[in-house]
Length: 112
Length: 112
Image 1: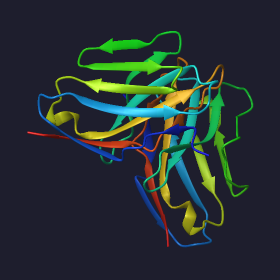
Image 2 (image 1 turned 90 degrees about the vertical axis):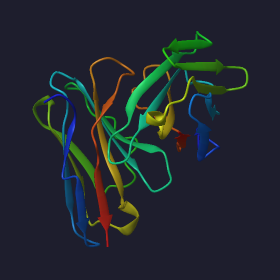
Image 3 (image 1 turned 180 degrees about the horizontal axis):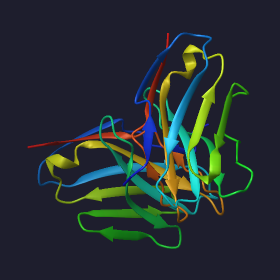
């Protein structure tokens, strides 16, 4: 039972354009959401997060949007750069629980 | 050390053998987590240590899996009588603040 789903295993975008990565969740108890980025042979690195009391959080080229009614969040990268090519994982947790529940990841390729 | 380190980076073992995987968290981080990533899957939570509290073992898939954290620092994940389905990348993370988990590069375990 996947509580966090990333339905697109891969996405290709032209350099300079917008990348939109999507994530859906089923557990309404989740109240904190994170995006991690992972390069090959490295551990995931934290990118950006959002609390369920917000619907948008922005950090430079990265913006995360949360739609609680749809149980959907998305990560926007504008403008996309070749160095953004990596696997992006959506993650969530609830309340006092510290462990994260991850999606299966989306491989983003930014073409020069 | 600047980040979370894990050893070995790769481990190949025969079915039925025991393996030990090591994690050195970031100095001062009170929380330590183990996850695993099977091929094509997201990260799956295994176990969580917080200070001197009893660990949260709710993610361990079977009693062949165990983990220790000595002196509130280094952790060892032990898998007894390994099976082929144990093949995965085992990732360790540590944190000081809730929701900010820093990951190590992982140990790739292959069970033949």
